[in-house]
Length: 189
Image (cartoon, rainbow, N blue to C red):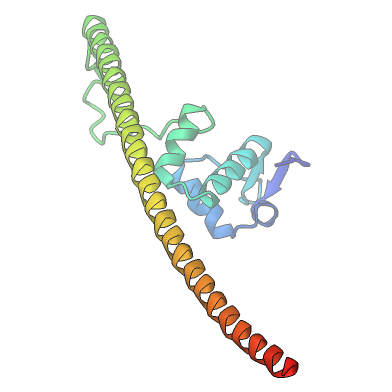
């Protein structure tokens, strides 16, 4: 989308993106977008926010679900992290859940898990590809046999047809030859 302005009102952006104001407010809520407001309390969209909204609208029009769009935007760093969960009891201290050692162990575990998962998925993809190739080859052979049978049947029908035509033509010649001979004999005598 070509950004022509530094700020868009909600109405301007909704017209530009061809969506309703309600849709933009819905995306703000779903994607936890902090939309600034002017002195009168009206929303305005910066260039970055307008581009983010454009990407969301575009992906939705392509049929992607909200969850998928969130993952894509988060992975591309176009979307802020979701707001933190605030505990009501502020007297509880916020201790880290994991020490750096257990954090390293978790990282190692997830790295190994990622490697195993990648290997497993790759093997399954290769297996599926081979199976698909076998099925395609089998289908090709079956289709070839089917075509051959059809050609044989067609050739057989054509052969019978031409034999019938030859027979009919022979009968016609025979009748005309007899009539020709009779006419010739009648003319001569």
